[in-house]
Length: 290
Image: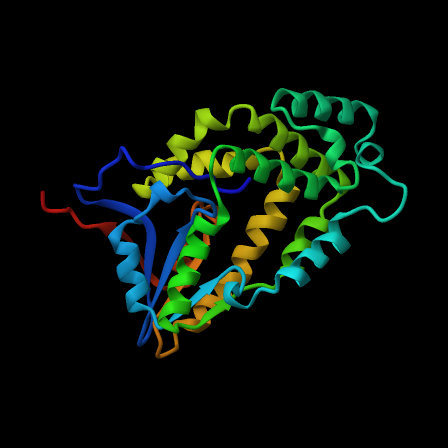
C-alpha cells in the first residue's frame, strides 16, 4: 500500500519532464507539494534538481510526521501498545483457519516465516512483511525522501513540522475493522511475490511525473478495500487540505512532503486545493545541458 522505490540509475534526466511536485500559490507565499517515496537506495540519489530548488525556496518543511522530533523509544512503545497482542490471542486466531492458511501459503512463497508474526495484529503484520520485503532488495527508510530532507533541514537549521502525530497514524490502522486488517495482510503477502515486476514502472512514473500511471498503480491497490482507502487516504487528504489552505495566508514558503498516493486522483490534495480555488500547477525538471 505504500509507494515503493527502485533504482533510477539508468534513467538519465537529460530532458525536461514533469515531476511529482506541485506549486500552490498563496496570497503572499508559495506552498510546494512533494509526493514522497519512503524508501530508497544510495544509487537512487541525487533527486531531481527541481526538488532541491523547492527545498531551497521553502523556509519551513512539513511532513506527515515531525521527523526531527521523533522519539524512537516512544514510537517503539506505541507500536507495541497498539499492534502487539497482549493476551493469549494470536494472529492465527484473528485471521481464522481459512484465511490464516491462505496467509501462510503466501508467506511461504516469499520465504517469510509466518510464525514470527504470531503476536502481531494483522495491520502490524502487514507493515512488518512489507518492510522485510523492501529491506531484502536493498531499500532503506534512512535513504528515503523524508529522512533525506530531514537531514538537510537539520544541517540548514530549517524547521520541520508534522501534519499528524505517530499515535494518530497508528490509530488509523488499529481502528480498521478486523476484516480490513485481514485483507491488508493478505494483499501485502501476495504482492510481495511480484513486487519486482511492478516497482520499476511505479518509480519511473514518480520520477517523471506520470500521474496517470501513478494513479492507476497506487490507487487501484485499494480496489475492493473501501474502508482502507477511506481511513488511510480520503479522510487524511481532507484534513491536510484544510491545514495547507491555512498556510497559504502565511508569509513563509513551505515544502509539504507526503506519500505520493495522497497527491493523485480526484481526492488527491492538489485537486482538492484546486476545488477550493487555489492556483496549483505541476512542476517540471529543467533539461540538462549535455
